[in-house]
Length: 414
Image (cartoon, rainbow, N blue to C red; front, side):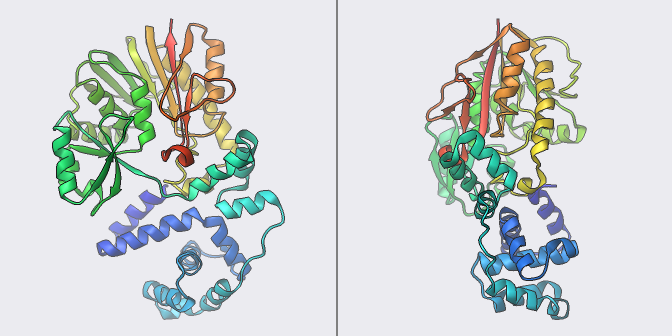
């Protein structure tokens, strides 16, 4: 379960103010971002997290964050804890908090362990990134996983005039910067309230989303009147931007394995005024569809190593072996999707992962087995080229492009 989902479930069970929600969300996300460093502090204080109940463990983590990162004193942190659990329950833990506040764990001598604690990432990821990208680039990339990320908003021209919507947002105190490279996309620099809490969002006039996913759809070059297959389509953000770039002319078949996710897809595309898309519940490993398409878009489930700054819990859930398992599934999905591409058609493959195994190696293996496909060279301002000689592909990185880490390849069928 993601940290965001867990917070939304927990907050439904209690009464809270908007201020309380914001503080709780900040603490929960920041604890997840620095989990290994915080746990090391607790171990040094004689309170190993593995020996505590989940409730006590997470309470202590939150209080250590308030003390060691937010800069609150030990007295302030203890008072915060008493408000949550009462003074009697916290009394036995107060000596540990005092030790955690005053004692600093010694710096590890081993390089990977030291970097793991400095950038708050698993050791295997430190080793992997240095091996693939080289040490200077890798350290900047790892540091970006502590970054909160940029927020982008797309104005939905299927339902309203872009300039009018931007003017309304600015009059309400939202500060926007138009993206020079992606149509209808704006960087949100300041917001008096969450975008999803506005009537403009509920009316489908705006949609938040990371820039990188919009770049992927843009580089697929969807045209009005085309027939498009959108695989792994829920919750519908790719479908809606495809429809917007197509001017709601043509046909989009959107496939997702989960009926529940398709219901979310239905709500989103209806809200955004998409009129050319139809949903299909199906497995990308065995879609069982009829017909061929001008464009097939595959954004498969991936490791999420490019978006760990937005989902920090993912850092601690993922294992290196998982990357190879995921890549094998992605390879099968790409092979299945290729069956639905017309001659002269295009197949877009993209992931929010930085690993070679899920990206270049998947594409390379696919091309080896499918000689009727070739890579079309993609160009995007400031984007970096693919690894392993796949210069036609592009990569985006959080510390370079202020987006999710993303890989994008466009294959053409001859």
